[in-house]
Image 1 (spheres, rainbow, N blue to C red):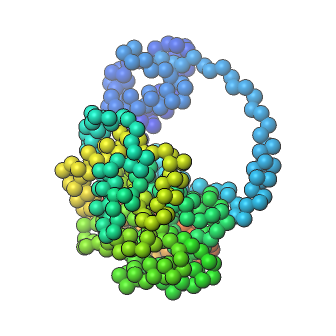
Image 2: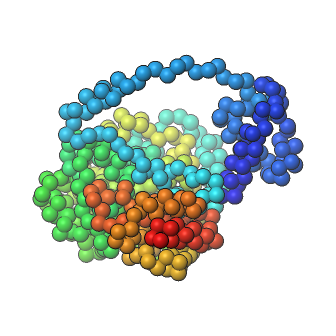
Image 3: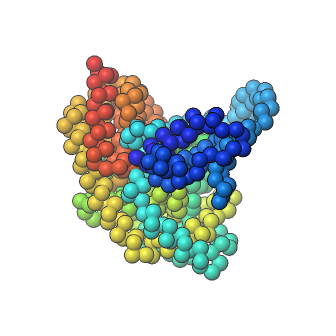
Length: 478
């Protein structure tokens, strides 16, 4: 966080001084900037790269940085208003509009402004990411014979075998497709399993990115409420009967956003209900590798207890590594596998082979289990720090469930409290939080907030962030 702020501040200072130089004139050397601003060479390099990306400077290896020659003014913007008619006419025959609101996804992807504490992040803080292990794995992978060639369309056999072993049960390497991240795998699954206009059952609340996928495919998300033990089977059965849906998307382990784990007695029942309805269960097993130190033994994936091909399983390595380490698995068996394979090939061809080779190097190294243990300990510490701070400073916010895995807490606001007003006030106070509304496909029962404890620097920043959130809460409630 500190490094990112220094980069932004230095870039701003250099941007303000560019008028001192003529176009093409050389700027002070990196060494001079390091001494003048008392920052690291890395900070200087990143600040200059930012200005270069803005077209303000040009960097030349071995020569330095120069003020860029002003660009030729852009041609006048044309009249694009015709597109409103064309896009509306194109969707006139759609049973479900395909326009998509991506705000629920962007809130956890966009980097906050300098100085803002990131309680809305969806990934591990850089200090928790295995950067050295990933860099070493990528370097070793690049030297493998054929590493830059075309991989098998379904993925490298060794990587498919690794994912199959991790899932367990009847899943084999032949039933695994390597995909470019969980979002891509979910997109492929929903497009394969349901035609445009069809209903798809979803947990309520649920991951906004999945709701966006469904709506982009012209599907109708139908909510099925969850409680502390996961989805409620009786309501799931009712929803199948009422809608005729053939797909149910769920997160049985550390559900996003509630953190719930599907209770043992409900696991087999959910599969039986789907089987009777002639429907598929898309299992999004997105944070199995972000288990907390005190969690105890984890339940197996639903796919491991499914001999009938009801479950289409999605698991990803992204959450446990880095936002850019986009490698995941899509697993199924039966005729549906060929449809999944065909759609993935049409959409993305294949996951780049160097990244697949690097994945094999990473998960096969001694650094991988050490990393998972370190993350497990760190997430428990951060979860406890955030829980304690919330109970001390914001006792009016309900925290119904403390998860033993994942990276966030789900808070319910008192009746009548405005989550939009609180979210805006929090940002003014210097802390970014995620509002609950995008997690519901229909009207929410109350206002909520989702707070991430994984994307910040540590316990001290968590305490400060909750302090700022308390100040925002005081403004909203008076």
